Image 1 (cartoon, rainbow, N blue to C red):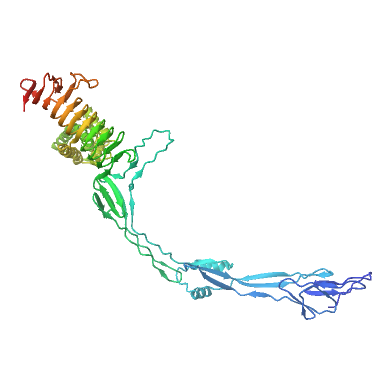
Image 2 (image 1 turned 45 degrees about the vertical axis):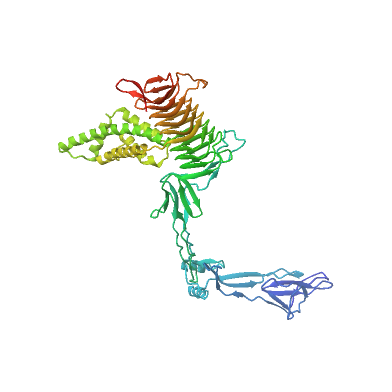
Amino acid sequence: MVGVVLSMSEKDVSGQACIVDGKVVVNNPQGDGIPAVLYPAEEGVTVYVNNELLESPREVFEDDVIEITSPSKVEDARCVVSLTPDAYIAELTVFPRRTTEYKLPDTEMSNELKIKVEKAVKLEKILSLEEIEAQLKAKHVVFGIDYASIKIALERASGEPEIVAKGKKVQEGENGRIDFQTKTEVETITHEVNSQKQVDFRERFRFPSVSKGDLIAVVHPPVTGVPGETVTGKVIVPKPVRSVRFKCGEGVEFLEEKGEIIAQRDGRLIVSGNFIKVANLITHNGDVNLESGNVRFNGDIRIYGNITENMLVEARGDLFVNGNAYGAVVKAGGKIQFTRNVVKCQVEGGLHFALLKKIIQQISILEKEYAGFLNAVKKVVASLSEKGRELDVASLQRIIAAVSQKIPSSMKESLTKIESTLKDNDDRQFASLKKTIGLLQNVFSGKIDDIDSPLILNELGSSLRTFLTEVEDLLKEIPPLNVSYVQNSLLKHIGDIEITGAGSYYSFLQSGGRVNIHGVCRGGSIEAQGDVKVKEFCFISTESGSSASQVRIRVPIHSSIYFDLVHEDVTVQIGKIVYRFDNEYSKIKIGYDSESGMLKIVNF
């Protein structure tokens, strides 16, 4: 290329080159000057020197033919549809048409010419919806297409993926299941050795127990799944579901309409695999000792072994012990039976019946007082009716409020006593009574918004009478406490006490019924509400703190005492009358004679 004429005074001048209007201009060197050097161009521009591609720096001169090509680069607009491996999502990536143009900026003359390139990029969004649809169709995308997202992708044409179709995920179903609402496993009680609190290491196990009416478990039916669909239209079927399998045994009822498993009685909950039952009995084979721990159960207990010193056995129901008891505490809500000896023990039986007896006394008083209140309300209502006045809810509530002001304070005291007695008792037998007592408390404290009919007042009275009838029937058949032999022990029972073996030695017997000792009673004392029968009773002068004047047998005035043999210095009390035997008697009955007003001894 012909160089530009330069006026120079130096003899040695190096060659020069520059860019002018997109072309290379070269000046040859003069004298000993070095030639100009041309470097390859940057991306997008190709340089040929004398028809040879310039790939590395080379010297150039004025007569060299230097050609520069900078064609525009065009990338066509396009789109890409891709699917996730599970075919639930389709993504669309839109690329615009991209035109890149290259330009060589003018440069100053330099011995080394490094061609710089300026490039300009033009983006054109030219794809149409029809072209996108064709691409989706090619990928078999037919379900869940979001045309709003397609429009956004077209408008952006950013080369970034946009979700344009979503399938419907399959919703797997759930198998049926049982949710237990109470503990089902025997719990081992642990104690911290270094605890500052007092601990009882005899407490070893806690058995899962329930009361009648308790909710044991909720049975959930299977939930069928919902089919899904991929963006390609393939339907995904959920896995099949199964109902939970279970079997209800004794003491358990399944309420299918509610999906509830209910306890039909008090007892121990036993869950074995899919078998559920409530046993009213636990059987303990072996001694009750430190190894076994104390035994408590919300039902009947049978022990085939001994109860050792300082151990506790407590049954809410009946208790049967095929063995001895020594230095133990034994309690039962119902019957107690020992086949062998009881020594230095505290034994209490019939505790549930004792509670019933206490409550029934309070309810009897309350029922009579409430009957008086109800009659007073009825009289006022009848008086209004005779005058032709209609009884609306407001009038009824005013009458109740007025009559309530005149009830005796003893009625409120009765309610408070009953409420206190039942406060910590969770026995289902008292659930209805608790509700009735609560409503009565509301009535007599002025909370009568729910009383909109005289029938509600009548129902409260009926509820009290029904409870009385049911409990009175239960108290007619209180089970006994049976022991073979008792020594240095306290026996308390709301019902009859029967000593079937050798007898009683230095023991104290308290009975709410009769006492029958088939053997010899040496020392100690007996209190009973019914008759007392003793095969032989003797006073032992060596008994600690005893004296001949100390009453050994005490019964109410309507009861009698029977002896096959009674020794001298034995003192008895019937009602308020005390009698001391001054001689030995056999086959006698001593009781109160209403005609003489004195005690009478007769043979039988």
